[in-house]
Length: 432
Ligand code: PMP
Image (cartoon, rainbow, N blue to C red; front, side, top):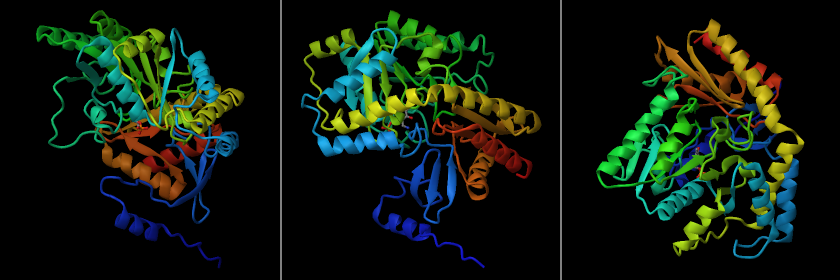
């Protein structure tokens, strides 16, 4: 009888606990991963898992073209970002060409958190205003300034007070929130933002910015309802504030119909932050704004230095990611494969009452699991565990109640992967 290959995952976990701040800086992986390719990840025993959770590895794990671009540049030159190097300009031009309107001025950073922190600084300095409006269920990063505006289990620190200049408005959730009619919910949720602005004004304070993810990812793949962003942006601008779209999860073609999720809402933000998929696993992110806002920011006398932000290797890698998205038509793929996934899930919803809602766009899809209409967090974690243990699929759960399956795979997945995922989900739901 063939012997089962030995896994070192217990040893690895034990070693991790000894040398890492493991209670804070957790791993949620039940397997010891040693390599990956495309939409698959491989364990130390050679087992192949379908990756349905990793939006970072956007064009596929270890994409040869992306890896090659990084290696080549690393062998040629890597410096800090103060040197004149065309890689930055090339990438900035390419990103600008993907943006609508006058969004053509870039600053590069290493992470989404750095990008969002800089975006907030910009908004505050440029407007001279102090108040920040963000959305409950949003997650914007791990820096102190961002934990302060995020409202998600990852960001909330027990006992820590939220700064007084931060105002959180309701998650515009049409499944579980206060307003559920998709045709009227957008403006109704947006009214809350207007009211916050009015309250600020009554207290002699002014709004610097409204920041939101057009599709709230950690909040449970909640798509901003129709008219929400349009109405909010109007109110914020009328009050002299700037609108920030956090595209760190939703950008780069994942939503299928557009390259950026905000484009689905007919708005053009003043500042856009991007990251995660931008480097396909390599740390690179950016703030993109208009020349006018950048000039107004510079006029305050501020200077920005980021040692690694915009280094030639990151630039080469991010450029290669853009190449691959175009060459392999991955945005179109996100739309067709994502559309198929959504269709299959909605079909499954008819047979399984545990599926309360299926929502999202392209390959950014949420499945909300319920029991008697209430969030079923326990079922969601059972599904995630069984997906891994029995069907060799990695999937994450999230959302304000922890009951949403958060589907955001590399956008190179195919219909067979979708079939495998949906049939696994059905099997689990019929026996859980
Ligand atoms: N914004 C959003 C929407 C995110 O999901 C994240 C990370 N999950 C961040 C910002 C922060 O990015 P990073 O972890 O790269 O700092």
